[in-house]
Structure formats: C-alpha cells, structure tokens
Image 1 (cartoon, rainbow, N blue to C red):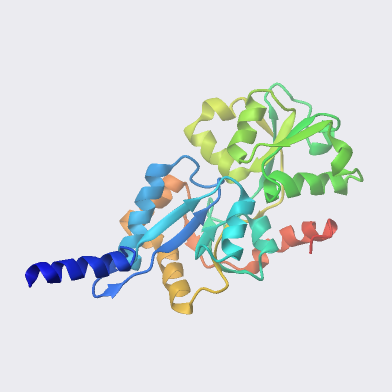
Image 2 (cartoon, rainbow, N blue to C red; image 1 turned 30 degrees about the vertical axis):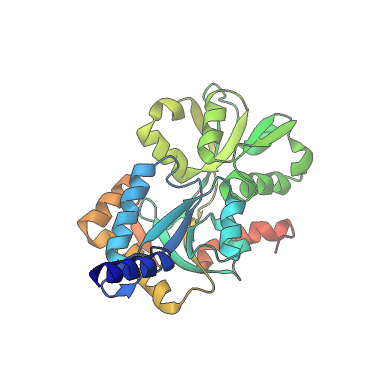
Length: 284
C-alpha cells in the first residue's frame, strides 16, 4: 500500500509539471523579462535578485533575458511574461498593453539622460549635428536614448535622419555603442546615461576613451511594467516588494550593486517628453 501511495504521489507531482509549492498552495511561476540595458552579463546578480523576490513573493520567479527590445515587447504583448523592465520608448509604444509598476531612482531622481559620446581625441564635437556625414552607432531601434533622441535632434536641426550620416548600424546594446566609440570604430553614438555612468565606475579604462560631448534633457527612467492582464493582487504584491527593496538590508545590498537608490511607484507623466518626440515622427 505504501508503495502504491508513493507511485500515486509521483504521478500527481509529474502531472502538475513539477510546480513549486509554498505552504499548502501550489504557486505559479512569475516570469520577469529583462532587456540588455540592465544586468547585462550580470548572471550572479540576477540569480541573487531572483532568490530575493522568491523569498518575499512565496512563488518561484524566472528571469527571461532577451537581446533586443522588440523581443521583450513581444513577450509582454503576447502575455508570455507577467513583468518586464523595459526602455521608456517601448513603454510609451505599449501603453495600452502594460501597466506602470515601478520606476528606479537614479542618483536620487526617477530620471536619466541621453549622452552623446565621441572618442576622447575629438574635442570639437558639441552636438550630433557636428557629426554630419560620419559613421554613427545606434543602440537599438526601440531605444529612446540610443535611437529616438539622436534622430529627434537631427530632425530638430532641419535635417533628415535617414540621410544625415554616411553610415549607421545597430550594436543592440548601449555597452557595445560605448565599446565602438572607445575603439574609434565610429565618430559617435548616443547612450543611456545610467549605463555609461555605471560603466565609468566599474570599467573607467573603457569610458576614459570616450568623451561626453552633449547631454539631453531628463527623461523618466526606464520603467518596470506588468502586462495589462495581470491580476490586481499579483500587481500590488510585486509592486510592494520592488518598491520596498530599500527598506531591508538584502534589498539595499542588491540596489547598491545595481547602482540605484531604490524604486518608486512613479507616474506616466515622466514619459511625456518621449511621447512628444514620437509625435514629431508621427508614431503616436
């Protein structure tokens, strides 16, 4: 009889897909997508953050990393993930499909900028307009700081972004734009200020080969969002855990490694500047 009960238990366990159980309730896995602008090649940190979230949510968590912003956007629209940390440009694009959950505090504010960077030896460039006819690196076609901002600045000068540069290409990450500029492969690129600032702290030997030639106005920091179909209890629970990270020692340790002060609820109004630039291109 004992053997039969053991076999029955195993069959039931396998039939559920080996789901985790917390207490007496079976818990569905929470899927959380990340874009390459955050935690790129930081697998150990991501693993620690997963453990932190699981311990507080009492549910298993799976981080899903994608190399392109469009891939993360598709996961959200198809509701294949519950949450994602995305760029502000995709957030405005996806406003009907997602809910703003939290915004990071970067150097005390929920904002960041676009940096125009050039090789250090270039002391003459002071705006993207000065790079006309050169080779320019874009980060991603759905990046605000790495694509929308430079195109907007070119359009604002009266030129056509499609013909302004001799050649452009996508690196698919802000870090790779920095590498391309540092190596002198391009005359310039625009990058996420958070990425450049963090890299400047951990790899100053790389950023020392670049110069910040121009800084944009402030934009709302890339947000953490939930897909629109998420249940209210799941949304509130995740929001409380994320915004509460600065209230305990483990959370503060993770934030320190992320080089962030914490997360706040935030407001959609933070992204009005991105929406204004999109209107210039007829995108909304």
